[in-house]
Length: 344
Ligand SMILES: [Zn+2]
Ligand SMILES: [Zn+2]
Image (cartoon, rainbow, N blue to C red; front, top):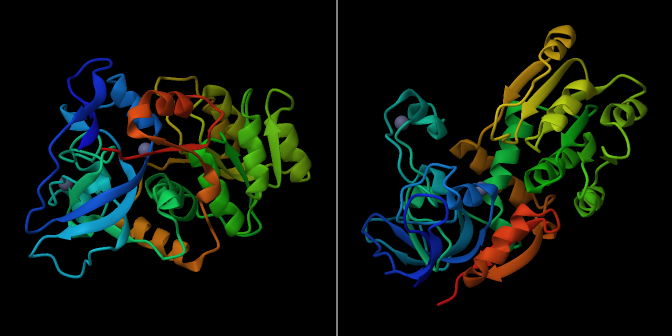
């Protein structure tokens, strides 16, 4: 089968190669991948700025269909449509984080797509506990957004604990920001989405997804828009999804005293942080990284209830051989979410 492989460490060293399909062990399930999303992490693996273990097949945001079930596996049927939780591929199972569900902090963890083989190919094998059945009304394309959506579900519903009546700021209208927005809108939270130069089409998508207001910070300061929307009070919660200094500062400024700030984006370098804002306004500042299995269970209930659909965020589908264009589109601001599908 054809697979997008990081074949050696160092900058680059990624290409589509012919590899053997994985055998399905007695305790495993084999999936045929329908779609796998491209994300910033893949680009970091390409440039070797995210830890990886070559040779390894890239791709960690995926959905597909069960095509083979190991003989010791119960409760999984051939033909089941599933999203895969690749991040738990290897964990120790014994440390305090594994035991409390926060496997993401296990120091022995290796996820699919960088630590072990991922899903930019036709077949993957996984343990049955890594599979989440998706409802019939939900497309396999939108289900491929489950991994980033789970990160948004944790940030919005578990970490920040927003409530109806709150006013929220989402700064950074990329896929994660728009996924947070969808949850906030469904929770009945008035949400202001901020973007910068070049974000116009993403801000339009935010309006379509239910943002109360969008702000291009090149035209208007975020705090001015937030003041207009809150009678001068400031926002109750802010989600920093851009990973950029100006966005971090904008969020801290836009919060009211005793507001809550959640870091969802990655800056990738040290930035100046106006820490006195935290002091003078007694802000609560927290990060949100990935999710637990419990988050995925909640996400499946969200899918089942049918009030949130993700298909409008998928703007591009390309075969794996077009990975260079897919990665370029992901880095630019024109496309929302770029998916790749297997060939060969
Ligand atoms: Zn990702
Ligand atoms: Zn562990």
